[in-house]
Length: 398
Image (cartoon, rainbow, N blue to C red; front, side, top):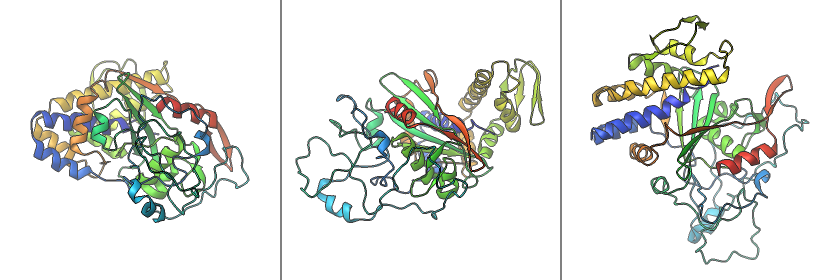
């Protein structure tokens, strides 16, 4: 399957919008941003119970006092409105409740998770300067992270300007257009300003999880059930970490952007054929369909995944070079033709700020792998990740 065009979405935004800003075409940037901008349902509200308070993370040590904890796309409740918030129903995902019939109810291969209680939102940790005292009748709720010494700023732009880690979920569906199929690609990007490193965590699409407010299923099924909102919550629950932003691109979008810039130039190290596309050693310009095949091949590469990664990076470098040579009007045209293939809750100003403050994103990168085992359950193959591995990933990214 096509597993890497997700990176094109973020690079296109960072490169193209950043380039437009350099040309001081602020108005055009705003217009382009509105074309692809979409907020997730529940952005800014406390998360649904069970999304960030999975018992798997309950007993983990607190973070260092000098490293603020970010609530990502969520915001802490205001003390003066606590009673109103607790009385309000939890935000719902606009999607029908769907079961996962392929998974037997008696299966115990995955760690049990208590079904979420939707009677009220789970209280979030309060900043240390708060003087309000909880009522004696208030029962503390389990938290994925013990109450920290201080919280990160709730504004994304403020967080980008500090040393707080930024988490961005990249989603790529397996269809030509958005809002169809499943999420074939799920990658969490973690921007760490302390170490000036960009980490890539690929969540296997067959990972068996309990989808929020639904049953056990493959994690990429959340996209088919509730779109990017439910898919984001499923990843947040799996890692116990809130996302700051999301970027979504379709398979057709990847091919289209390469065609729009006139193709990419690569130099195949050896001859191979995949998906009806043949490659021989020597410089060659590839269109979108050819570039997709070139960047996917693994089995015939003597270096396996390492060789495939090298070819993917080669395509990306060529694509970014082509984007950098386009005029503002040409960049405008490229983004304008991707409005049905690209979607994000990044605003143009946020993209520009992230690009400026985290300029190491193309030069200092590392990959984080999810360790697990493949197992057939109910006639379907799943990727099973242990609670211990989930905790390791949580601490690593947090």
